[in-house]
Image 1: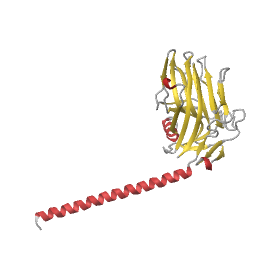
Image 2: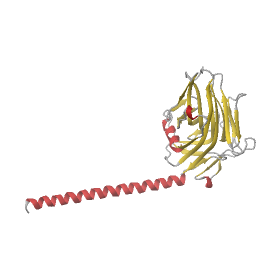
Image 3: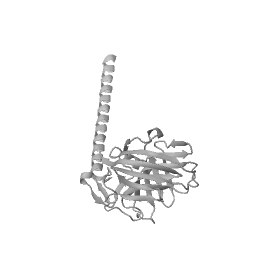
Image 4: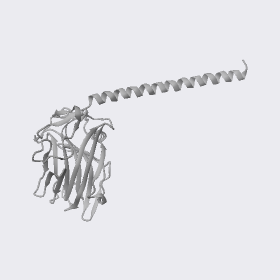
Length: 297
């Protein structure tokens, strides 16, 4: 066999080998993709979510079986009411000594209060039933569980510099808080509760300055309870008074927050209730919510 034939044969062997490798890798990729699709399908069949009842705020709080007033450090200025198809909240914190809020909640509160019904839980709203809690894994898949929000910030303003919480600015935050038990721990005032905050917007204030907390800012604080959260959106002062719509990958942010808590090895959380709020420290804020809805895709 002459040299040219040997080279041609080697080229053929190498070419066939490369085709074999490419085919094998393609097969492995397709096999892996099929397994991922199977796992995702199993995930969809097993995982349940909570859905928000009266998400468009059509029933007065006096008669509403789903929403109940949440008033942390309530004062004479506090407003939590449903009127004209919106949830209207106002809080005025003038002491600078503590955070306070105006809001509403669904489900079971850590202090034992609860709405007439528990959480609306299931794979979809159509398949859901009222249940005491829903279990979320530490690592939830993204793109599966969404929060659709429509709200407007009517006004916020500075009152005084805080004397607590190691901050040099007054603060305003608004959003959704999940009240959670950790793994198999109890859910009550004595147990270590996880307060998981999903902030739609947040602000640091001085007398003549409003600073927007950047999106994706996050924190975790440990004391008797755990307070952890993410800022998932930004609303700038130029947009105050305007309706803002946000679509938030809630499952992704829940997973990010749980993985951000480093001091405790959390595997699962049990969500018993959630709070929709505006909170202030050394500041005042008025907010209206037009819609707050969770969606499974």
